[in-house]
Image (cartoon, rainbow, N blue to C red; front, side, top):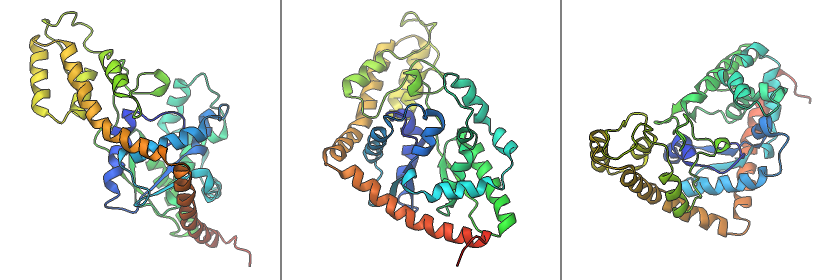
Length: 323
């Protein structure tokens, strides 16, 4: 994850909720992608380190365990940059230009200078991030599948020149790709201010839920409302374990026999029940002086051992080993 802000429910649904159970099945590597943050935020780096620690506290809050998985910082494993450079020697520029999010991000972030080589090449750096650990699988949302497909093509091209040196990864898709924003926007995004953060207090969560966008045509509670595409019900489906209650709310909403206040109040209760243990674990991690720093330094040390082994193999294949 890029340390560019506080983590929110979209991260929990799109990534963390999928990452946690993977710890029981795989040898997992989760990292702070600080170099990736520079691809769009190179002009404002003052908060990167503090966000990194905050984000890792959220990981722990969500249930990731640094004793079972490897947590590390991208920039503390410089072998990522070396593999990225070597991959760039064989990858045609048009491959990078055709990645869907390349143009999409340029259109969406017009206030930022995205004309850099770093921004163009970030899918290639992602490839290095994965390949350097011989990753069999990568947990991704649907919006990242194109990047991973590019990574697979890059690996195949590299191996074509130098032999079967690095592993071609496969995706592990999340069940829900993204949540809508509180304002009804298609995506929950910190830049739009339409988020509920994992670190929000119960009162903050309730206030945000009560302001959520619903059916704009429903000006009174006795008017039948639309459930489909209604963010409040999307959140109920994602976070309210009482499916009978949710089904009853939907039926009454369509019939015009329930108000938004009742539906939202129940959602706030469900969200806080989900977030309470996350907040508790998060606070415990932050309360230990130096703990998060130790976790990331030790994890980066372990990651660098494996990255070093991969790079030794890559250099041997390219025949740039000097003895």
